[in-house]
Image (tube, rainbow, N blue to C red; front, side, top):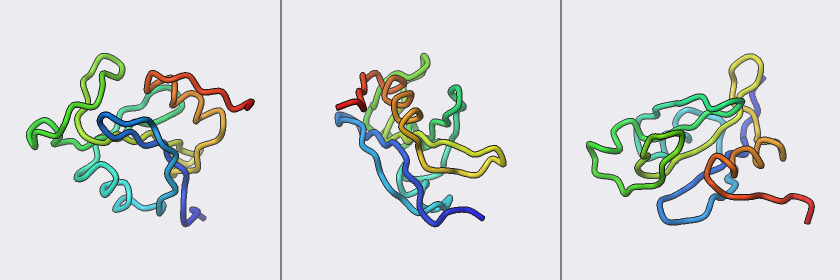
Length: 107
């Protein structure tokens, strides 16, 4: 059974990444990115963005894996069955590196 909420790593244009706790629904993910969701698998994580970000003229966010993303982007972790699960500390570290930041959870 899917959990009601999950931890995801969100990144708004011009801001630092944040850990968000959101409802575990497609609608909640769509609210995060501001529209229809486009997904890109990056290792064990999935990057979500607004699939119409360019056409809508959303603010540039950053280049990730060679592509410029616009608007808010979200990294999620999926379980073995493909359902969204909460980010672990390891997934958060990986996500911060994907977003171009170092993360030290030893503090």
